Image (cartoon, rainbow, N blue to C red; front, side, top):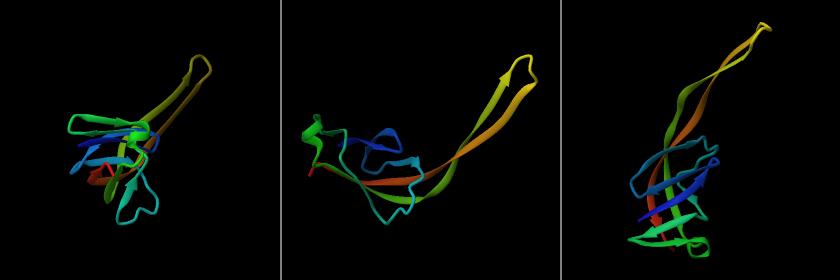
Length: 102
């Protein structure tokens, strides 16, 4: 059984036992519940829209880490303009405990 959840402006396909990285969740408790879901698949039978509105995904936070560094370089030719910057996204690790149709 798997589900497609939306968190941090991104969609992720998850099933029980998966460990995923999502954008940092501030004030993450012992368990996090995702609802409503986009798609839920129950052994080949797909539920979407109103049929998936009762489904829930339960996850447990494992910790936080930093993502890969993204290098940013802005350049305008013939003007002497060049800027360098970088960014490392803060991530939260989640272990998916249960996907239930409800």
